[in-house]
Image 1 (cartoon, rainbow, N blue to C red):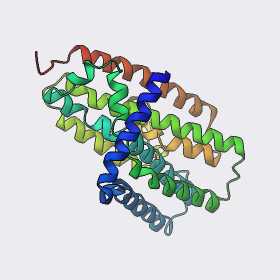
Image 2 (cartoon, one colour):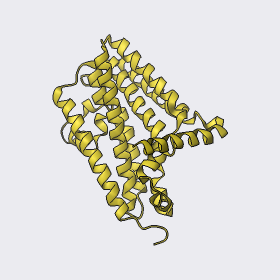
Image 3 (spheres, rainbow, N blue to C red):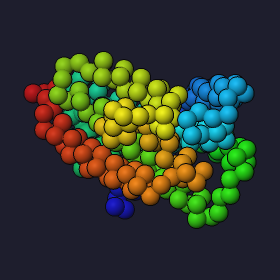
Image 4 (tube, helix red, strand yellow):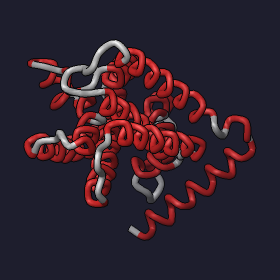
Length: 263
């Protein structure tokens, strides 16, 4: 464990050194994603100027939903997105060979080798959006509830990571996964615009259990606003555990089917 931690810190140091060479691109992710979330926030503000609620959620809950999604996305961009994003290309051109020959877990190295500190301001922006939603709704947030919300945001970030790795592992098994990668982007975008509380019937089964993007921002928002039920809480925990176990096994399964550049 300590060896892995030292390795991760070394990767962070090297990444910071490389990024500071190109200072203008340091905050690129923050500017792009920050603008996107602010536009979405303004969109919901316009909608709520005409209606009192969307589903069971009022304006304050929707603000928290946007802030929570922004937070999970920010942590994703900050920690693992750019590393995991490169997996299909590494599989295609054989660059994965050099990861498999090193005495470090290849998925661990790929996960942390492209951290993006320039996304950290998006974390701050997300916190401000969440606080604005809490203030607008008049919600009381004791310390224990704040800890619970933080835990579920981190848990949903892990679930997002699981989905990223699963989709990026599929290229081990197929010649081209471009369509699958595009579908992943569409799913994320749709669940950013449509809160999970609006899914019913078969759509709820799909986006809560099979492709659980629908719970990623919805569950923490429900917890913070006091509308999360005990079954919903247990469901989120179970879904994350199941997908994390599946992700690790699916990654190992993909590695067994990897055909290196030298084979």
